[in-house]
View 1 (tube, rainbow over the protein chains, first blue to last red):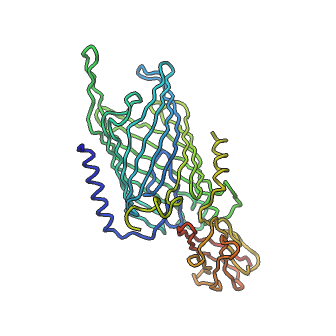
View 2 (cartoon, rainbow over the protein chains, first blue to last red):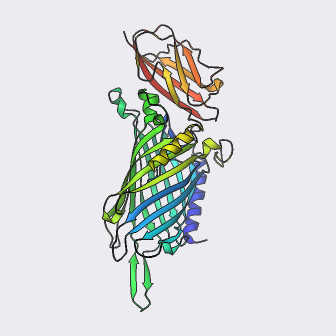
View 3 (cartoon, each protein chain N blue to C red):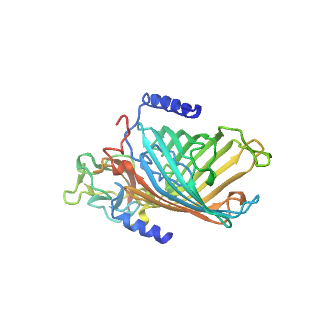
Length: 319
Length: 115
């Protein structure tokens, strides 16, 4: 076992032990805080611990030419699964198959590094539709294909998550009650400060790996919330299940000679049903370093706790 | 892509629904001009009668319904409660239901009885 995996295993054990000491509230389904349902977001991880499966998530984007690299179109096919260990503690795993199509040159295909995560929800206030959780993401270095740029080093990202619905606004602002915000902030810590490469002619190049601030948030306006709790404005299927959303997914380099922020702004629509959720978003780069042109991302997401409430949709431990 | 999204939504819409409030009479956030004889809530999934309830409160928080909430035997998505004659004012409906998929959902809304 590597030092990184040993650290993660230790953390998981500590969180599992501590979670058993904390009294949990009534059982709730995925993404609820009181009467608020928060949908699963695509570009920014949500604050929930849940039994859920995203299969597939498909994303398409274009990276402009730079530093001798040609313009490249990238299409990603991802699968992510999350499983509750206890009511408030969960783990997740993800894999992404990438296809890179440069304007000149051969198309490259392969898996990106595998990802693993652990998350613990430590605060929930139903009346104020508020959730807080903390977790660690682990990008497992060397588990993917170098052909598609998978890093040879790992990155550990301790992350704090939040969710807040605005159902507690006064009656004078009742049409703002369907609004909600979820978000995250974390520090990406690479397992190596840099990678040294020796070329065929003996020339040495060093690529430095900075710490990065990962941050993002999603602003949602829930039409189901409007219909059921504020005012019936006459929406019917499928519009009464739709949640317009704008996500902001950002990364800021902090050190080791790197600087600047990259990221995307993703406006889109989420349709949330009983068992599945369908989402589609445009992906708009915030600057030229983040991409070129407007891409898109789409996802089919399954709520395993609704699909299999008495088997794999339950926490492994506890109720 | 949008066409595919719309098609997928149409296909999965028939698969089922959250145990959310679909609609109500009096409607959520509405104003009625005569006191309704009862309150009816239709949900998007069948309910477990023993664990599904609704209360109607006046502006002071006093319960004003007749205390007989029931899930309809023929349509188990319908939860209703009888009401006395309501004076003009704002009334708050508070519901909590258990759907047949074992999940509890809850919510509230208001309606007005106009003079």
